[in-house]
Image 1 (tube, rainbow over the protein chains, first blue to last red):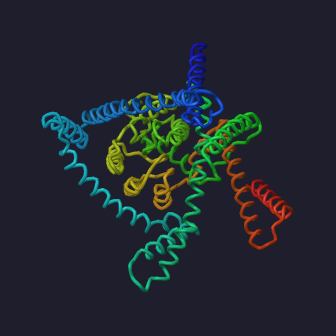
Image 2 (cartoon, rainbow over the protein chains, first blue to last red):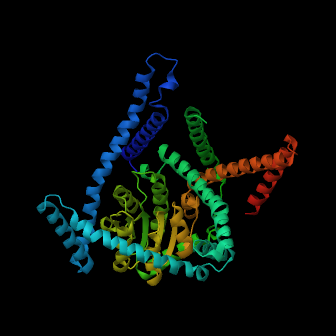
Image 3 (cartoon, each protein chain N blue to C red):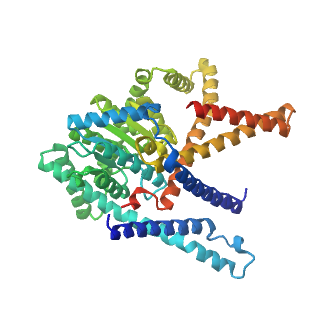
Amino acid sequence: MSRTQRLGIAFSAFIAFAVGVITTLSLLLGDRPELYAEFAGAPAFARLMSLPAAIMVRLVAITSAVTIVIGISNLLYVHLGRVVRGAFFSIVMIASFALTIWWYWSKGGDTSLLAAVQVPIESALAALLFLSMVQGGARVLNKRADIWGLLFVTVLVVVLLGTVPIESLGPVRAWSDWLMEIPVSAGARAILLGIALGTVVTGVRVLLGQDRSYRG
Amino acid sequence: MDDSTLQVYTILFVVITIVLVYTSRFFSARRMPRLSQGRVPGFKRLSGWVGEAIEAGRPLHLSFGSAGIDAESAPVAAAEAELFYHVIKAAGSGDVAPVISTSSAATIPLCQDTIRRAWAGDERRSRAQWFPQGPRSMAFAAGLTATMQVEDPSAHVLAGSFGPELALILDSAERQGQGSFAVSDQLEGGAIAFAMADEVLIGEQLFSAAAWLSHESTARADASVQDVWRGLLIALMAILVIIEVAGQLGIASWSLVLWAALALVVIGVVFVRRR
C-alpha cells in the first residue's frame, strides 16, 4: 500500500470520527437550553449546538433520496444484462418499468397502474406467506428434533389454540396469555437487549473509524 | 429519570464502550485464541456450503434484507458487511462471484464495496442487486425468489433486517434444495428463521458473527466487549432480583446480597471456563 493510500485511509477515518463525534454530541446536547441555564444567551447557544446534527440529518435525507436513482440504475443494469441472456422475467420487468414510466408521464402523474397491479400482487403474496409460515411451523421438528424445537412447537400450538373463540378452551387461553405476558415477553426483551448491546459496540466501531470500509 | 440524566448516562455508556473496545483490542492482539466454529454449528455448516459452492461452480447468495446505512439498522448493515466480507473471502477461489441483495437503495454502495474488497475475480458490478421493498417487503421477497431461480445459488446467507417475508424466501430455498443460514434483528424474522432456516443465529450473535469466521483479533475483541456488557447486565439483573426477593421475604441484608453476588460470579467464572 502506497503512502498516499495510507494517508487517504487515515483521512477518511478521521473525517468519519470527527463527524460521528460532533453529530452524537450535537444530538445529545443540542436544543436543550436548560442545560446551559447558568450562561447568558443559553437559547442561542443551545440552537448552535443542535446545528451540526440538523445539517447531518438533512444531508442523510438528501443522500437517501439520491440513492433511489442508484437503486433504479442497478435494477436496470442487472436486468438488461439478463435480457441479453434471454431471461423472460427480466424482459417482463423492463417492459413493466417502461410502461409504468410512460403511463405516469402521459397521464399527468397518475399512479393508478402501480396501485392496480402492485397492491393485489402484494396482497396475494401476503396470503402465500401465511401458507409458507404454517408449512414452516409444521417442519420445525424435522429441522430441529431437540428440546428447543419441541418447546417452540408446543408454545406455537398453545398460543394458536388460545386465539380460538371456543368457550371450552378457556384454560388454554389462560395458558396462552401467561406465555405471551411472561416467558415470551422476557425472551423478546432479552433478544432486544442483546441486539441493543451489539448495536452500541458496532456503532462505536464505526464512530472510531475502525470499520472495514475506512480501511481502504 | 429526567432527560438530562439520561443523556449523561448515554454519554457515559458510549465512553465506557470506547474504552472497553480499545482495552480489549490491546489485550487481544496477542493472547486471544481463535474462536472454534464447532461451538456454533451454523458457522461450521456455512464453511461447508462455501466449499460446496466452489466445487459446484455455483454462487452463494448473501442478503442484507432491509438493513440500510441510512436508517436505524445502520449498525446491523455494518456488522453484516463484515460477516459477508469473510464469507466472500472464503469463497474467493471459486469461479462464480457471490450475489449480494438488498432492499435498501442506500446499501447498494456497501454491497459493491464489500464485493470489491473481498472478491478478486471479475464480474463484480452486477453481483450487487437491489429489489424495491414495497409497503410490506413482499416485492423484495418476490424479486429475490425469482433471482434464486436464475442464479441458482448453492446456499443463502440471509443476515440483516428481515420481517415475515423471510418465510417466502426460506420456503423457496427449501423447495429448490438450497441451504439457508438466517439471522434477523427483527423478532418476527428471528422466529421465522428459527423455524424454517437450516442454520440460525439469534440476537446479539448477529453482531459477533464475523469473530467466528475471521482470523482477525480485532473482531474477537469487539465480540468480547459485547460479552462484558452482557455479563454485567445479567449480574445487575440477578442482584436486583435477589434484593427484591430478599426484601419481600424480610431477610434483606447487604451481606446476603454480597454472598449471592459472589456465588453468581463463581458460577459465571466456572461456566466461562467450561466453555
